[in-house]
Picture 1: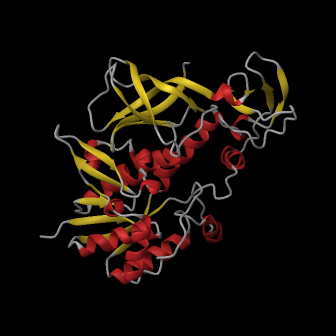
Picture 2: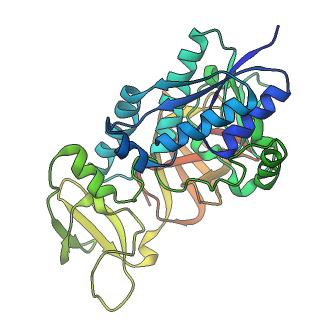
Picture 3: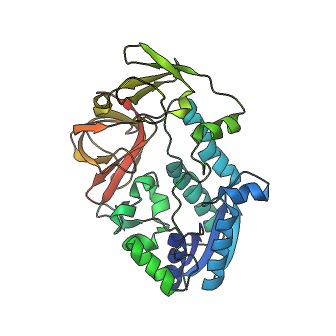
Length: 363
């Protein structure tokens, strides 16, 4: 009997090729696009584009027709609003920089989609993520880096659980991006040349502060730009306009390049400093999720990434809380712009050990 797999189809080339490959491998494939947009107005939804817009549904439906597989649109508005949009707004208002893709992966693309897929008799879910999954000698499942190093998405997948991994397939993880497009062309898929989406899907204009203002219905208060010791340098537009490491858009004429080094939500202050002030060696992470191991231990050494674009750097685990939920680490060399709210993800070679949310810097 064929194994049944639900493929999350965003209308892009990666998820389309994932569906194609799985059908070629003999799976009983069902295509699903997750309806996550919040607007009722069709024209507003159309403008969203990316994986949130009606164009994505049209592209995914056409691919499903080409592949001759069943296709459905499932409503995940409630889950997306609660776990992604509300989280995104809350974090920025608290002076942190969230990663909505990580939240969406864990709580919408997996937790919610997987639950519904299992309910209709599916054995697996699959996506077009550039990653691989392996069961290790210790019995645990872990995400492994994809063959496409420049497209690798393991950083954004660190929060998946063991139960989710055992039911997940990543068909394109073994290919370079150029090969994926070639497969799409050879299969005659009309999305073969479709460009990748770059922005956060629900903020296509990248104006996070305006989005937060629309969501909350409130104008964020202005406050002070200050030095680390409290000297006032000017006025800022509201803390959700800024993130640690930011240089552009500060509108401060200080005669030299300056950067956001810290955000103090309680005082409504944005701290300004020099590039060297962004170089730190220690951080604390909370809400840990373990993958290749069941916990980390003090004294262990590994690689860690502090943002999606970070190449990774050697670090040592200094402390681990009794329940394993919090860790404190030290990098071998200073790293730039450790940002509260972003994820730190730990690697042993190509495998994800686990990760957590950066709570703050400690040195």
